[in-house]
Figure 1 (cartoon, one colour):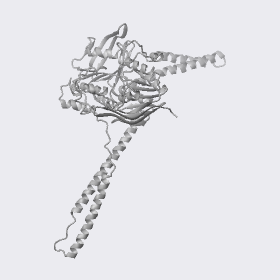
Figure 2: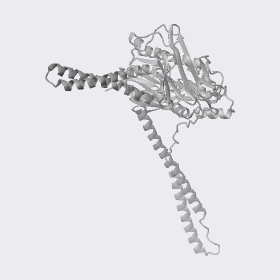
Figure 3: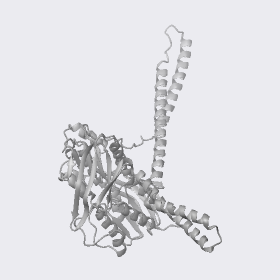
Figure 4: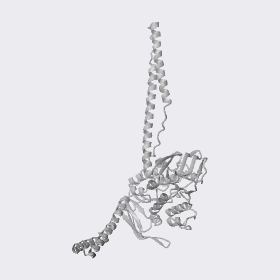
Length: 543
């Protein structure tokens, strides 16, 4: 039987008049890998802090039967790394300045894993993390001896490592077995059934109300005895009328009782219908939106790029890929700064969402005012965009400082959408936002009429939106015209000659052995060996 490592009971957390958490019970057992998901502002980070003990709940309690380690979403990690973690995540205790977003994430991961806790709480551990880092994280979660609670918008990772998904909605926690795909399917099934039940409930409500109204109308039509009617006849008529009226009244009361005792069904909450349209009403009408030639980038004594070239065709959707620290963010920053080695078409209007997008917002101003900072649109358009990003109406006038990191990212996205940009440069745009907004953003970017260059390590996001790829390769850039899935398929095919070569060489070794015995027809063997030798040369040349 699995060991209980942590138990939370009757957890209540509120901010002002708003209840953020109202969790009746959450139990975590050895071997469990729980993915915690929910909309921005739902309280995911708050819940992790409560579980870890970093935040005391307003009510309820958490029993911890084992040591707990928390990796927070932001902030700097303490210089407390084990030799294993420092080596695996390429982390240096003293290196803090000039670190990329991915390198900072590696520090926080290494610090959390170095505590040797039995319960690991990870808040967006894939933010800015490259493919190598995500692979290392995946393996560590799978091999972790204990239990893990993981807040992440990386759908592939949730599918690959999670034993269950916990959805936080309206302060309450709902558990689903399996990974993200299983959760999404079961969630859709439950909501479809809830919608059906709600429809049945409303239909029965309407039927009962109509029947009550009909009985009332029938009762009102029961006529009094005509004046010309004799006394005996009138008495009989009144008695019959009274009986009919009483029956109708009884039926009406029975129907009213059924209506009053009808089991109420709440309208199922629907996912926010986020349908956003990004500008680009006047896209670049040329072959290329920008061209970069002879770009050399150094970081201290380290060369990141040397005489590199990149072209961004107008209307293209391009993903810029490479490991942490290779220079992706630096390269995009050079474009934004209009480096003289970057030729930008005169029609191009650059819109930039950097990793520090949240820092560029003004904390003392409202979400609406921040979104309007670069806009020529009226206020009602800005409010519509914010609403479509699922930022509630009562939040748009709040100072940015009281909003969650994900809600602030939505404001930054709204500001970009309200600008007149027709060339978008997005550096890790999926950081901090919830899965629902992420999937909506994918749809929006796929329909974007302008030019797009995006940096992201989210595999599903890149596969969905990018039709071409630019890789950091050594000190240069290599372009692949196709999707991530197509590139991976090509890589797999490229590995096949190695297999063919090995099989071919094994056969040549067999022929040599046979020739050496003198027991076989040498002429036939020599001919086969020569043919295989020619095939081997062709494989080596890549023909």
